[in-house]
Length: 545
Image (cartoon, rainbow, N blue to C red):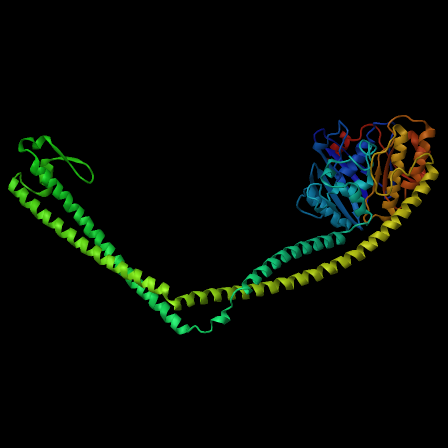
């Protein structure tokens, strides 16, 4: 990857500027500290997708558009970023942070997987993680531990930055990740199937311990079938008769209730004194509504004549007696049918043949279940065998890949030690044995002595990334100087930067104040981007927007 240019547009303050870069070494220079050089390098890597932890206080990043032009594998791309929205030149739709990270990894030709801090599952990395090894930030990278606390986006991953450098240096790969996932999935499925197979096998042993259907050879199947049909027919006919009787009894009982109600009212009418009829209210025995004798007489269509009432009362009593006799007869008939039904059921229950039927049905059910379980168990065992063989193949392939990665790690360890020896010649007073390879932890020290130690380790990893990194992103280092140290103190540090950081074949960005250019022997070979005055220009904005 080579960055060609960066355009910054602050739409709120109506300021803008465009910066051009060379393919080699780019020195961003100001006359003094605080001249805007840190804002520029932060903007370069922010536009590329790195989430900067600390922007300068007066830097209006939320209202600013960043457009970066770059080449990846001989193809030119344009990336526009505003906050967490990206627009890339070969895609019509705007992209969010996740989508842009996938786009960038696709263009770089590598997928980086990192373990989630919360689930420990491997996930494709965000762009901040991809860029982290290549960018040293003045405000965050010279703190308690190298490559730590540089971006909030990285807090979601476990074991950062170690797991990231393992990926970037080719000590793990997408192929290994995929095979590990396949192995874990196959192992989990194998374990689940094994549990099911063991449960089925135990159930089959219980079935097989029971009497099998072969022992029931004496059963006459045709006779059994006829008995079953006769049984069902008898039960059906008897139940139909019982239902008919029940319906008839219900109807008769309803008619009887009405007649009894009428009889009750007629008796009350006869008891009442004629003079008091108009003042007495009768009560319905069902709904308990009140009405006078005139209402009752009208309901029966009677005149207020005692003889007529007596005659109607006698007729009603006769009807009541008749209905009661009919109901009693129906109840007796239904009880006879109930008795027949119970007798049939008792005979059937005592039938040895029916007992044989029950045994036969039970045995057939058990045999069918046993056969079905045998079939399922056979299928499960075949799947277990297939999964076992698949897991063996995956493990074998993983061993081969991990052997390659182990050999690569041994090579990197040797190179790491070799680079330390080389760097020690330039920075002899730095203890480079405090951190072993891929160990990232805090180191004691303060001031320029601590910065010198940090610089040494950053240069070690830059050297490894240049030669063994699996993808290529321009290197950027903000100044390691925050005060005004003596020349004698910082001269070896600039010499180390020139010897171990600068490389004509790799694009890089380095920040310094103008007076420190004297420490570089080959200053004429470098592209100098001099920032004078403000970083952004109102005139450039007016001319171009």
